[in-house]
Every structure is written in structure tokens, then in C-alpha cells.
Length: 509
Image 1 (cartoon, rainbow, N blue to C red):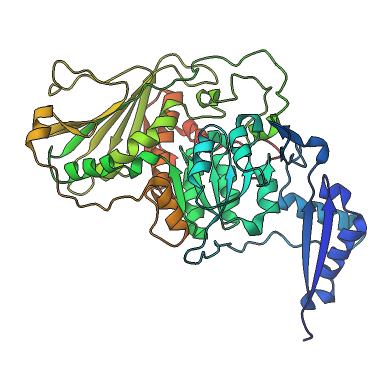
Image 2 (tube, rainbow, N blue to C red):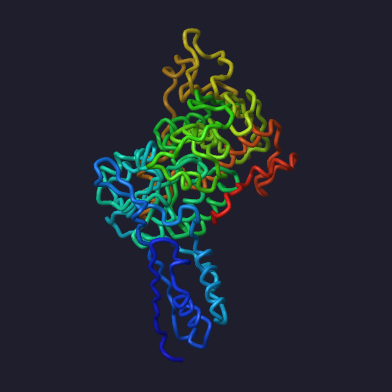
């Protein structure tokens, strides 16, 4: 056989490559891939997307510009690219079609000792600013936000870093330059962004809750294992010293076997229990509303959703439980070695059609684990709280948020034995658990070949499944029996529809 030769066809476009690329260009590719030359010629198609200058916008004093998505209303995917190419070739009378997208598993680049990671950040305002700042010791090579007016500080801190509004464009254009990606967006976009990054062999840091639905959490954990990427969910409290001390108290038998846990929060601190607004104000000039909606069903823009208030809406957020549950449940599940629940049920204030309620109580039942007894975990939000434990001193009150472990031999409230006199009288438990170098540092070290981070997706995925299952119980107001192995609610068949998302037409996830 003759020598293998390389042919690269570069298609350049300022908008839609399927429209701008000439039929003759696609015919050339299709011809060489469908004839006898195919065995001796390696054909590569590179689509070079130029910034859409008509959509460029300025931030602040005009020095900071971002790149507008080249196809706002027609999201581009590799599948649609290949499909369009095949169609053009067929119209031109060329036999054969372009092959399907590769099924090869991409793995992350090996980072050499002392080398910095090249990190791209999706979501740079609000909590996203904190996540960007935590990456400052590495090389930040790209920034993405659908509304740069909410991320001016980050834009000003990194004036020379490329800025985008569409994460897909960013990942495709800078693929070879990116080692890892942070995802700090509304909940409904966690999975699409993280999935694309993982499939491209990028390490990922995803804010809590890991995903918007139970099915997505399972898929993301499996995908991360398949591609061998380092992962971390953004529940930074899991790395704190207090979590380890708590686990050591429980593990040492300080309060005996634990059979009940109560956890509560002051959330929501955003509107919930409301109906969809009827007004249709204009979309702010700096916001790409179509990209903000992403995979969610289309609806008119309203400030009731963006910024920040999206958490209370079914289509975008996961309510109080999704917001704080990942923080509160992490030490509980670690200390008690909890697996998936066997059942979950909920009661609440009146449900709105599209929004989470003002207040709720969610009850989980966890089965025995070896010598450890079954556990009932009860969640309260919206100002609701559990009963005062008898061991709590008369002059003390339960705070706005907290956790109570109830054991056969005592009680722990927010990491301290009750009553407080017992805390002072009893020596601290032996240090048996490794300490954390810090939540973000755990992930960065894992990206460089270190130990898995403390909230990697093998831990965060099942935890997110548990939390999000509580939201299904909340919306159905029924007791749900859970078959975790088969990802199935066994007694309320209709509830299984809420396990998986329904993505907006045109978004190929």
C-alpha cells in the first residue's frame, strides 16, 4: 500500500459554515472519503469560526469585548455539521457520505510537574467571580458569560483573555488550549456544558447542585469515569476542618448509633411560590437571552429570572433543596456512610404551576448499612425548623440554618456535642481522617495527577441524585419508593418522567 497522505480542508465562515461553505468544498471532502483514495488519504475538516463583528459588544470603557455566538438561534453541533455536509454532497451527485462522528474516548492531557493548567471559565459573574478568582494561580485562557454586564470585574481583571458568550464556540475554537473548565451557571445548564467539556477530555469543576435532574447526575458521573477526567462539585464546605471533626465524633461512637438527622435552612432568599410574569420587557442589550435559556423551554425575558432569581423556577433551578442541600448533605452522608435512600416524601406550602413552594419538609429513609442502623433524614426550608432537642440549653435557640444528629447516646448540633458542658468535658476524638488542602486546591491537584477531590463526581453524583429526588417528591406530593440501581421510581410510574430532562428543540446535548 502506498504512503498515507494528509489533506486538510479549511472552511472559514463568519456565520453558519453549512451555508457559507460552497458545495464544491464539501464535494471535495466527500469525494476523497468515498472513493478508492480513502484508504490512502487522511482527510481533516477544520471549520474556522470568525467573530461575528456585528454582534460584538463593549464592557465598561470599551476595552473589553466578547465574541457573540455565531448562530444564536440555530445551535451548532458536530452532528449537524456532518449531516449538512452529507446533504450537500448528496445534492451534488457524489456517492457516499461523510462518516459519523468519532466515538473515540478523549482523555485529558497529562500535565507535567510544575506546569500550570490552562483553564476556561463558563459563568463569570456572581458566584462565577469567586470560582474564577480561585483559578488565579493557573493560566486562565478563556472566559465565557451570556451577560458581561454582570461580570465586569472579571472582564477588567483579564483584559487580554478571549471572551465569549457561547460556551460551545469557546470550547471548539480553543480546544487545544484548554485543559480544564469551570461551570458556574444556572442549574439547567450544568449538564450540557460539563458534558461537552468532558467529552473533549477536559477536567471539570461544576457548581452545586451537580445537575438539574437525577438522570443527568448519573450520566455525568459515568461520563467522567469513562474519560478519566478530574472532577469536583462546588460545595466548598466539604473541605472544611469541621466536617472531618464531625465525622470523627460520629465514627468514634461519641453519640452512639445515629438513627435520625434533621437539617434546615433559611432559604429561599429569592422569590418562590409565584406564577409566571405576564409582562414582556425588552431584553437588556448586554444579555444573550437565547443562550441564557439554553436547553430550557423558550419563554420571554423577564427580570424575575435573571439575574439570580432563577433558582425558584422549575425550568432553571432546583429550589432551596438544590441550593443548600449539597452543602448540608455532604457531611451527613460522609459521617453516616449513607448510600441512596429507599424512599422520600414531602409536604409543602401551596405549589405554583412553575415554581418551587415558599416552604417545605422533605423526609428521606435510608436503609441499614452493615452494622449501621437505618436513618431518617428530614429537611426543612422556608423558615420551618425541627423541634428543639431536649439537650439544648434553655437560653439558646436554633439558628436560621443547622444540622442535628440524634444518636442513641447523645446529640450533635452544628458539629458540637449537646449540652455545651459535655463538649468541654469530653476530649476531642482521635484524628483519623486526612485533612484537605482546600476545596479548589483539591481539584487542581487532582487535575495534575493527584488524589481524587473530596466532592468528585463519584461522590457528588449520587449525592445530587438524592437531593434532586427530593424535589420530585416535592412536586408530586407523594411518597416515592426508589430503585437507585435501575434509576427508577417503582410505585409512582408517572413520576419517572421527572427523572430526565426535556431539552429545547435545536439543542443537541
